[in-house]
Amino acid sequence: MQRINTIEEYQKEYKHSVENPEAFWAEQAEQFTWQKKWDTVLEWNFDEPNIKWFVGGQLNITENCLDRHLKERGEQTAILWEPNDPNEPARKISYKELHTDVCRFANVLKNNGAKKGDRICIYMPMVPELAIAVLACARIGAIHSVVFGGFSFKSLSDRIHDATCNIVVTADGGFRGAKDIPLKSVVDEALETSPSVKKVIVLKRTNTNVTMKSGRDAWWHDEIALLGGRGEDCPAEIMDAEDPLFILYTSGSTGKPKGVVHTTAGYMVYVDYTFRNVFQYNNGEVFWCTADVGWITGHSYLVYGPLLAGATTVMFEGIPTYPDAGRFWSVIDKHKVNIFYTAPTAIRSLEAMGLDFVKPYKLDSLRVLGTVGEPINVEAWNWYHENIGKKNCPIVDTYWQTETGGIVISPLAGITKTKPGFATLPLPGIQPALMDESGKELIGNNVDGRLCFKFPWPGIIRTTYGNHKRCKETYFDIYKGYYFTGDGCRRDEDGYYRITGRVDDVIKVSGHLLGTAEIENAINQHPDIVESAVVGFPHDIKGWGIYTFVICDHERKDTDNLKKEIIDTVTKYMGPIAKPDKIQIVKGLPKTRSGKIMRRILRKIAENDLENLGDTSTLLDPSVVEEIKIGAIK
Ligand code: WTA
Image 1 (cartoon, rainbow, N blue to C red):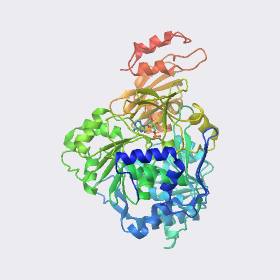
Image 2 (image 1 turned 90 degrees about the horizontal axis):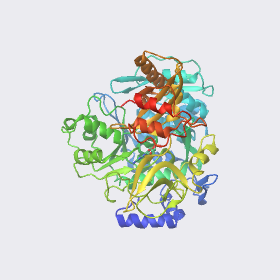
Image 3 (image 1 turned 135 degrees about the vertical axis):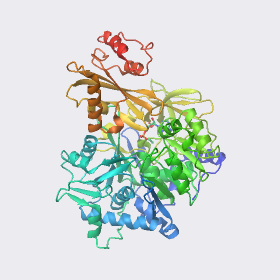
Image 4 (image 1 turned 90 degrees about the vertical axis):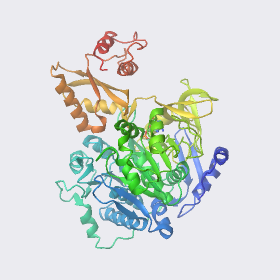
């Protein structure tokens, strides 16, 4: 397996990938197991959009993640699982065992009526069975839709409903720190409004009491037992290159989350290429991505990327602060982790706990550090570099999105000269463009604009499930002929890219992308709330916090109770990750004459920048702004 070794090689490979993208990606695709080679490398236009890679090719991604490695590294650990409780033994699952486990569960899915093209929802804690369920879906050609376990019943049922899933795979509950999170009961509530679901398969993890609905619900272990020792093999379904592999929901500026669709071959080639090159992965290394499989980072760099490369991937069930804030570092020493990939939020929160939690650990197995999901501030970068990497480990600040499938702008570890706060340079195959507000591409360096890409790469989003128009309107219509990311970006004098943050109404809270409209919908479920507006404000640890303005339909003197009720409502409908940090009760919201909320003004107030509210003369009632300013929460 080839990979880039020097900056000169990067430049050469980049040039080749731009001048001859088809030849470049065909070379990358050669090393995989194909049932049938492709006829055409790429067909595309960004107008519809219609993007197809490796057209005519046939394969199964699990043959590439599992079967392909059996001869050479069947006994090597594929998944190294670290439980929430450090006293519970870790589990090591070899490639051979994982292959068997995936085949067995694939047969369970088949016995429960699953077939190619079905949508299967996976709502599970971070246990190996989560990865097994994901791969089992791919084995039989079913499309997995993993929903993060931190979402609650309404978010779950919306996602199940949107994809018309027929099977849900879940667990009785999950352990996270000192907490025991119920999952099955959330599924039960979600299924009250999800008639498409015919079967629920439940893993026993916490031994929490659950209700099993007869005919619909079955235990994972009972279903495995039903195979009676058979089912160790399950032929991989032959998939077309462009058959969907998975749907993953991501928040948008408006309305419900979008089901981002990734397909089989392009996604596979792209995550494998980026995994090996960005992290400069060497055979035999232990790679740890701390993201939950419920997010794209977990899909691409906990499950698929490392397994495609034949790596040992660490999967951690718990949280960074349990039993104490040294847990990450203790796990790194315990499992001799070589490459560690986490979120800036986690780094900032651990930095705030002090160095006493770092000092007991050697951390000498580490070779490369990575960050993902949000901009990393210089201070956190330096802390990570000095105290965790001991100034010996290159840091890769990787920029990408659910929609890009894999990393698109990032240093290559140890090869690209880094600059704290900069995601640095585009990977081969990626052609960034910065646009001004009028839609003109900004040429040259030292420019600030909106980040777009002007040519497809194999991992790019193909559609939004069930609504191609939404995909076109969100990503491809804003700048004709370009894919638009929704991010602001600077290209500095060296041609390095620095992401400056979202330019739309989504916010990154602790690295989780949340739509303000989605949070508002949850808040509005409270019977006393007539209207709400959510904006982000800079937060030292979380990156962004959630500031909420609410209008009540009658005066509530017990504001503390009301605020608590609002938080509970959001937790119930959307999940604890969307809890507002600040709630301000207001009489009115700043609206234009056409009734649109002027979020720009609310953002300024939330940021405590009260002097620079800009022009308020176009407001229907400018006096509301004065009232909001007085009550602003610092
Ligand atoms: C943000 C996560 C700055 C960005 C993989 C993007 C980043 C959104 C970085 C996608 C980074 C991701 N520096 N910002 N290195 N990486 N982002 O879909 O705003 O959960 O659009 O995918 O995260 O979030 P998503």
